Image 1 (cartoon, rainbow, N blue to C red):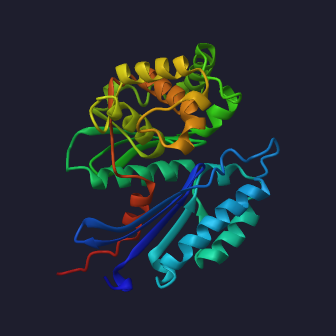
Image 2: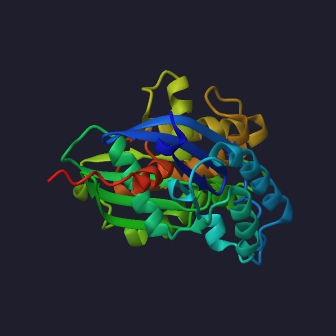
Length: 308
């Protein structure tokens, strides 16, 4: 594949940094390379909103490893974005300046609703064509994006400042996984999501989809316990909370399907997902392959030639 046909998307998130390289055959995205590294930016903001020097170094080191993979691509074929942690960071200019210099392309800090729109595009483009109304939810490290749409059109997009990393730091900071901690975490997540309850309630959609980190992590654990791959159910979430409470502490959690680096944030992720299920009336959620980075690649897709 010649470099001239490749596109690249980089998503600098609160927990991970992802790179996707691909090209288009007609409307179909063909992925060539996907890299993911855990950089844990979201857990490194202090009370003043300052991103720690150590966290910035982790992020820059990751970008240094990604840079050679996009070095031969023209800048107009690369899109690098940062999300909630960099939206919050009061010293983000320092991170963005060096990060952009490392990559050779500017890093955009996108707003929450734009992030939700791009997530919906990434999800919808990788699903089979359908006229059904879709609810798409992406629980990240420090924000949760909500999208209602039909076909390729995102009609309502929202971003709420709750996520697996933020909620783990707030409600499970001692590593405990006790019933009272889950109750407090779910209650505070529901309070944050409550203003969106009417707009995203079950009568407005026909199928619920989960995108990216938290949804993927939960679905892999449930699948490893003889669940249906790619599916999250209320019963599965209840079982998972009970199992985590039985373990009692994140250091004691050894679940098949759960990656080691996600153990410290599983309590926050599960509690936010349970709040989402309860508030929006979800009984089951399908986990999709599409995500923000796929939406970014579609935003870079060359326009079809005018054949008139």
